[in-house]
Amino acid sequence: MLPTMATMATEDLWAERVRAWRASGLEAHAFAAGKGFAGTTLAWRARELSKRQKPPSTGVRLRRLVRESEPRPEPVSEAATITEIVVRVGSAELVVSAGFDRQLVRDLVRCLAEEAS
Image 1 (tube, rainbow, N blue to C red):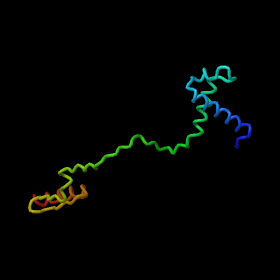
Image 2 (image 1 turned 120 degrees about the vertical axis):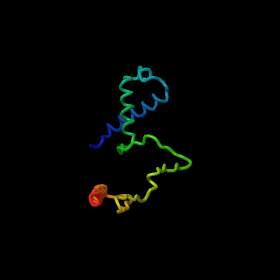
Image 3 (image 1 turned 90 degrees about the vertical axis):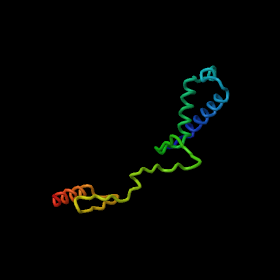
Image 4 (image 1 turned 90 degrees about the horizontal axis):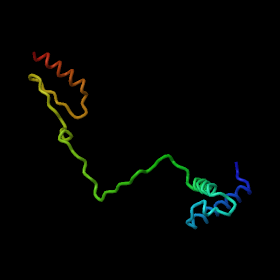
């Protein structure tokens, strides 16, 4: 629904009152005294006007931005540097690389152990 001219004039009037109130440094009830409106109404209008002036939220909030002058090196564990593991069962050797299928290795070791015994 589009605002009417009367509504726009009323909003302009309240916007001017809120600007004058904030510039005065007075509390809302003290500023409103004798002006024909209540301090609570002035405070409510101020909240409503500030809601309309804020851009709509995108739903994403930035909590904190951390900047570092030098990037920190990623910690490297000893296990991360190992590229292959050799598994010996009897006279057989099984070379296992990173990303191996654990169940397949278990089955192969079990099978080799049965053959070795």
